[in-house]
Image (cartoon, rainbow, N blue to C red; front, top):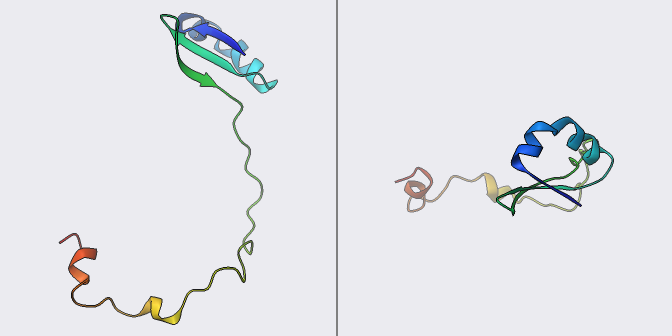
Length: 77
């Protein structure tokens, strides 16, 4: 893992991004103390619309109106 100071990071950002794209992590330090890390961005897979199908059950009572004593709490009161 490479460590660079803030000035180097600003000056050589494109080069540092190329290193990160190649799988390396880069730490950015200010006055010798680490303050940030450049790491490859996660790529999200395709959405799986039915991934939880059959695993989550919502009871019909979920759609019932809230009791009067609870209603003010849901309205920020």
